[in-house]
Length: 240
Image (cartoon, rainbow, N blue to C red; front, side):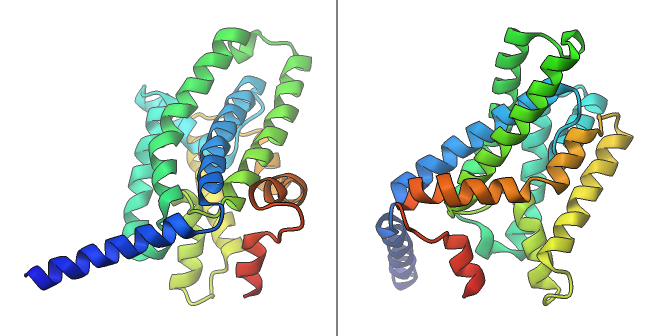
């Protein structure tokens, strides 16, 4: 019994030592937390545009409409539900960033929605020019946040891990790309059936953000987190 306890303590100490000695870990954790704040503020902007939000938020907004729960509460519930299959089938994807994501995402969605709605009013009261501005700034801000979230490389949220798990469990028969398309389409259908808006914002977030995120990766996130001239760690993993 004592030997098992000693081994367990040694494994925990070893994991904690690896985490502390990982290059720039403090900056990466801080970048991850900031990124989640940025993404939540971007979602609030897209809600103000009334042109639709990203597929995952589209589903959660739809669920909030039929349940009378807040958007953030529904987001948190869905996150924890999706965490179950990740815990059962993809524990290798669970890292510090996964826990940060689980804790912060839902509450921050409500906080930023409350702040922006209090300042600018409901989407129905805004003119078309303001809505278009919120759409553009929302998409750009979201890509900025996603870039820092991915490049911090300390773990993915449950929804983002599901496509990787599908690829892993199917031995590559379902690639990440098609797994992501399947997840996004499922979210959009559920959101639409629940009364959420599916518009050009939803389509743009689902199909057109890749090049913008790559731009932020190359010119903003990677230089800030790892230093000028550094290579994106995601590219290293992919090439490896």
